[in-house]
Amino acid sequence: MTFENEIFNKISIDYDKLLKYGFIIEHDYYKYTCNILNDSFVLIITIRDGNVSTSLIDLDTKEEYRLYHNETLGTYASMIKKEVEKVLFDISVKCGKASLFRFSQSNRIVGRIKEKYGDDPLFLWDDSDAAVFKNEDSNKWYGIIMAVKEDKLKKNGNNELVDVMNVKLDPNLINELVDDYHYYKAYHMNKKYWISIILNDVNDDNELLDLIEMSHKYTVVGK
Image (cartoon, rainbow, N blue to C red; front, side, top):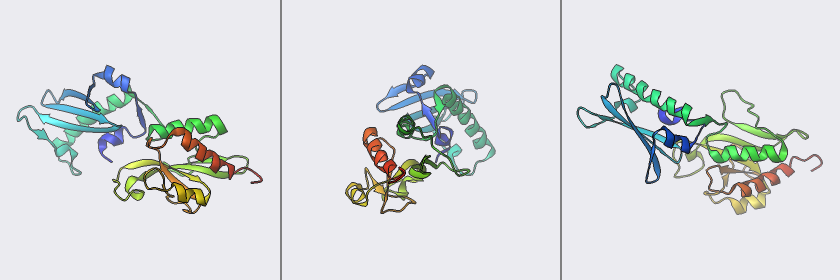
């Protein structure tokens, strides 16, 4: 994950506030520019589909400065990176709010589960993004949301972290659903009974809630 996206990790961006902050809309992304380091550089920040990236233009040479993106930084590049981070942190505070999970659909689904079953996500492991949903009556899990690198599920995926939800379903239904786009074989769960879903709005919220309801029925006492 890039340092820009690390700063915005688990931040829900308010796009109206971005516009008030000074961003403009260009094509399919939001763009913000400002001068940093005593007007030595122009910082360009773009936000597209929640992904944040930056570039720097040296005002003396009119060329792009890239060294602050290197893994190993010299003193000067490190100073520049800190200045870029200051701007990004300011935007994250003024134009966003903290969220439990990375993706907006993840946080919507959490709210819908709370509304229907009264259950909050339980973070059972220290230093982990994984949270389970448990029926308190039976103490059984009916869902889990975790951060997984996309290429763990998709053959052509990247190594960026995505929010993935696992639910328990009838094996015959799992065989029908798995298509490696909408639904995937379960990650870190029994693949016969569990299915993985990337919470990136490819699937409709109500459709996911129907699957969660099926999973929840497995946890009802007496079932």
